[in-house]
Image (cartoon, rainbow, N blue to C red; front, side, top):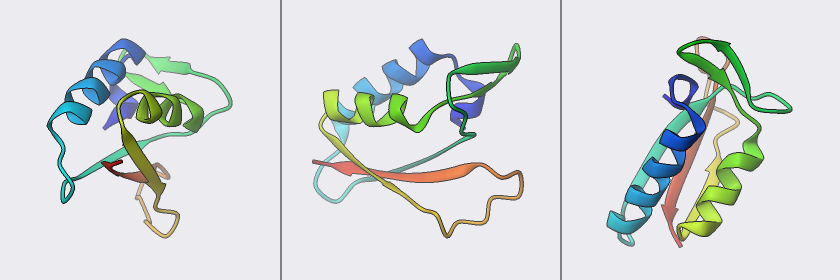
Length: 83
């Protein structure tokens, strides 16, 4: 899902999710990984994983990459939980 959002929208999402999540909440998201933030088109983006770890730390979230998730288009799945 984050493959279709601009960086500022992802930051806003993390802020809201971090505020409303409780101990048993889980937030899943997908992204396409690259060494740096790169637009493919107007509505399709690649991101480094570090952008998400930095936002998670700021918003009291813990991330867990799900390397065993076979996304049909090669995207990575991440599980976020409240810290």
